[in-house]
Length: 384
Image (cartoon, rainbow, N blue to C red):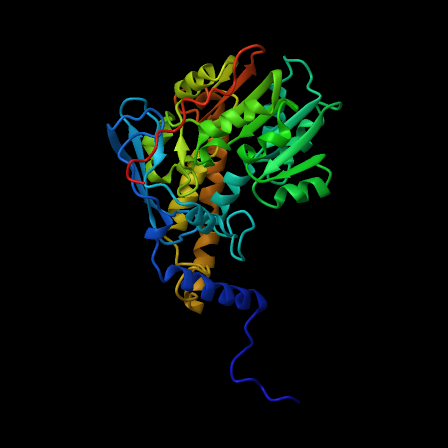
């Protein structure tokens, strides 16, 4: 019989976390200030210098180090992360979010899944139906498609439409391999305009613009790849939602540090008009996602539990901390189930009020009008 080891072997999952912890701690040895651009003194949408701080929060989803500020313009009401993350910072804070680490059976993991799923196939089908009043498209590009679940659902309604997907991550290649999209475009839409110009009848952007460093650049690129008479379909969180004021930092649509911009409906409507579009539909009811109470409760509970074994924490939790975290997670699960039920019971009423948390715009690229005027672009950051 072999001798009993002095200590039990480390499980493979913990070995993986241990290896990644060393890399994270090396990266964090420099602090987090270098992940941020200089704070800008003016609004990136209208240039006004009348700013107020709307939110100051840590990373409530993954608990990575850092503090994030959302400022709001007192003139145009545009809300934006300030100081904004650099490309290096975005890569750091996005890392492990979509692919996930080994311990997402917690309340914070539940909140992450809420943000990623956006209510699943039923919501995708409802969004696709919004285009039924218009001519059936031959080609459709879904920007920020991820694993391509929206095109897969929309294909049931538009059987003769060719769906392509675009995403900055490798998930779009997985979507093509799975047959959810016909062509997979990897990267940023503004970088692919020359290759895709005037190719599509519909371009959709579901909860994509708020992640973009420059929403105006994304809109101009979307119109460039549309054919004349084609339609742009956009859904974004509504910063005017009353849940934002009621729940504060626990409102999941703040989603710091990932959401760089929160754009009022009026601002996007004005911008689309400037770009030569005709807005044919706006909707604050159907896009409402019933997850505000559930997400807030999941974040609040998760941020009061003992820390998990995330690789960006200085050390793994003790056995007692693991046991306590598991027990408290199980004990509070019925509360989450109740909040989930309440979100859905209240949804038919809330989507008709200022508690609706998202809006949709459908705009037509008008033939014969310029759609890519070089201005207005985001004003430069004088501090940069």
